Image (cartoon, rainbow, N blue to C red):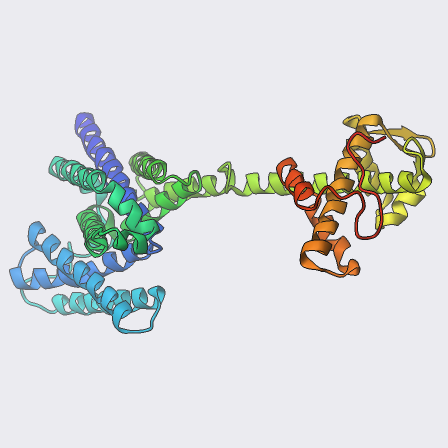
Amino acid sequence: MYGFIDFTLLNVLAGSTLLCAVAALVGTFALLRREALLGDALAHAALPGICLAYMIVGDKSLPALLAGALATALTAAACHRFILWASPLKEDAALGISLSVFYGSGIVLLTKIQGLGFGTQAGLKSFLFGSAATMLPSDVKFLVALALVVAVLLGLFFKELKLAIFDPEFATTQGYPVRMLDVLLTMLLAGVIVAGLRIAGVVLMVAATIVPPAAARQWSDRLGIVLLLAALLGGVSGALGAYASAVSPWLKTGPAIVVVGSMLFLLSVLCSPRRGVLARWLRERHTRLRIEEDHLLRDLYLVCEERGDFAAVVGFVDLLGMRGLTPGQLRRVAHRLISRGLLRSEPDGLRLTDRGIRAAQRVVIRHRLWETFLSKQLNLPSDHLHRDAEEMEHVIDDALLRDLQEQLGYPTTDPHGRRIPKETDQ
């Protein structure tokens, strides 16, 4: 008995892993073509084909049912393309029409089958919700063959598909068969979805073509890496979901895979190093803190410049009044600068260190150079310069600074007549 259970679990694990990995591979191209919901439309459009094949054949012959599903899925894809070509409707509207018409027809046919004398809906509804637990070794072998076919086709036409996805106009001018490549991707997507319907059901196949590619897209901008990550994440979600359903009898395989995939997607959205919420929050926080520090350094420099003494102590009251800071805000920013050795705290105020003077000079130079650029190149009035320059002074790097100085002829004063310091000045 235990050997049978282990063998069944092995089939389910292998089949779910392969199916989700292959669906993620093909779904990546649909996602990058901004047709992520095309898989949803094809999956639902397969239902009337299954019903028609059952009504014609008279029994639940799996090859006949899958052939019918593939036929109506491809018909729905053709209708979707025709709607886009023949009408001003957008992608989402065309997909909505195709999905609703074909899926509604399938529900009508299911109801019709219930009244026929030679059969019932029993077994047909498994295509809606899937039955991964009944996966057989023959199903796994079929999925292995499907994975090989998909991998070979994507590998053979990888360069052409990549160009057709990201720049179809250029691909057309170079003589690539963009329409045929589009048909190839649609047929692969339809084939993978139809192949997995009986095992995984409509909902899982839709999720398997969208969720892993969307998660992989968070980690890289390179198509090859995104494809590998999508297949990996899809396979992992399939394996973990299948195992979770095996150890928890109340948990169905399809929903478990969807939940695991959703968790991986959420993890990717939160933790990816470039697009992740956490990384974006850290970058924004770093930028905000740096702007606060630049502002305080520049304020100190301006006061010292006016006094003619860069070693002067600037009182807390003067600094609080310049930007309307609260004592707590000023204390936090000053503490960070003191810890970096740019400021020195005195009983009645703050003093710039030698390093602090140089750092403040860099901020002032960028500010006054940008004001000069706006005045000379864009002819902006003097009362429009400060705000724009205060935003740009934090993002001008050394290369842009050198370009500005060269373009402006190394100016010594800004539009307000204030001296533009050199970094060696004290």
